[in-house]
Image (cartoon, rainbow, N blue to C red):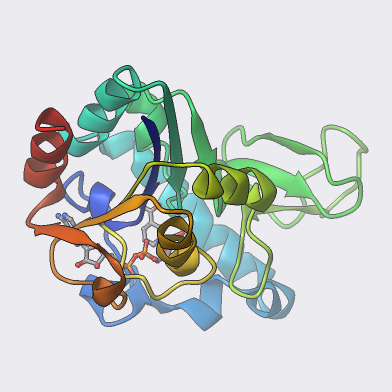
Length: 226
Ligand code: NAD
């Protein structure tokens, strides 16, 4: 069986990372327009860098939970298993997932707007940081896909969705496109589509099957019963 899993902020909630949806559309007390758009970065790069420096520092105080671990174990079970995450944290890889695509980028990486080099962030990122590849000063930004930007790996993700037998969406509200549209593509491809979430997401009616509850309970249970 060929499996594609999509995860969102809800899978990391029980590790202690806050979601948007559960905070009235705010991410750690900020509106997305303030910290998660290219316009925000142009307007106030210090605020945006500080925001992601704090999110990155916070990763040190959280651990993968049972749902991340269940997905890493499930990966071993199937002929083909692709995990696509909207999350920018590193909890899936710390739990042991290998075939993983971060479609919205990663908190631990920086990207140079001049030479496009992507590298690990060592310490904090500042507006005067120097690119390790081209030596450009002040050209580094968090390697995060902001609202209005094109997510990464879309060709690979589309190909996997069009070829999968099972699509499982976990802990995502279904309000951010193009990820929210993956269920429709999987349905059109003839896959079985399943929502695992705390509560029904915006696209509840698109899924053929659903199981609602905390990710730490429902993810292991679902894959354990397959
Ligand atoms: P969202 O905040 O819009 O929705 C979160 C969903 O998770 C909701 O449907 C909610 O009911 C569900 N949820 C909450 N607690 C849960 C639990 N314990 N178990 C199962 N489900 C639970 O998040 P989204 O759909 O991922 O979209 C928001 C965007 O925000 C993403 O693109 C992501 O890049 C970014 N983001 C990432 C992180 C992270 O990396 N951890 C955190 C916040 C936001």
